[in-house]
Length: 418
Image 1: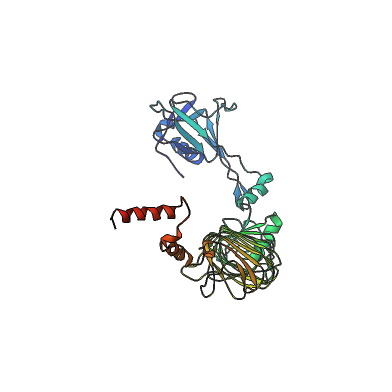
Image 2: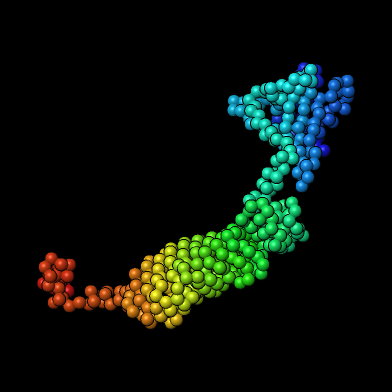
């Protein structure tokens, strides 16, 4: 029960005026009802007719109740006048407020009495009915089923699996999802999907890559899976989409990886399809790199807008690899023996010993190196030495900078300045 001292009643007028004193700008329907009930037993109101009634809060099942409706009896409510010149916005919320005239049969058009430089917003709420109970329950899930293996909640009856009562096992979560038409699972904390879990076509969202580790065992069905905001390890079954995740050891990857961090570990491609890794980064500090295992033959790779180091291994088929670097290093293992590998951008291409790999045939593969490392690391020094160490006799092209310098030095010598 909340009785507010800033609410007063003028009993001597009709309709009676209920005023919320400045500087208050908010009023809930329940606070209004509780306070008016208390005011009715004040000495000044002992001979007055009651000023308020209310209804609501009947239980509809499943934790849902009807909202409150406060009925003012020959009374209007308002907020105390402000000095202006700008208007102050005030609000009445948390239920419905209506007002009956003194005949107690006719409703006022508004339950508000006007005050100066005050604008009142009424956030009315419609009472729940049995007919919309299903819609209310559905909305409590926020378009997916919630899993928390530390929860005590189990079973498939409402409210199991909604945000307030996350279910503690994937079996119940998948049944709830099927019953209610959801294809999304929210994971709170860590969870492992394993034998008997068919998450084909589902979207799984963790809390973030630090709070949620999602492990997918080989026994789980995980085709066309989408995973967001989690650390992901285990085995996928193809056609996957991973966004804003931290990727560790993962098997059988094809599909799309967007804005992910590749941790120390190996990502194994599979499924006879191209894997697309977009706008992603190495999470490995220092000289080591994440590893992409090409799965032998049959899988292509498009690594776009990548930052950091990456090692390519186990490539025996003719499938192409295309890598666009923001800044980084591509390491080709000696198990890369076939196909065309194109590397562009700001970085270098090396073997596992750190030797630069230039465009052309290499270890059975075809390398197209369009990075600065296509220039041998000593080439720039050699160019500089070739220019500054060239003999003056070699500069014979008319109007060239070299011939101009040659002439300038001749003048210097003639004037005895050297």
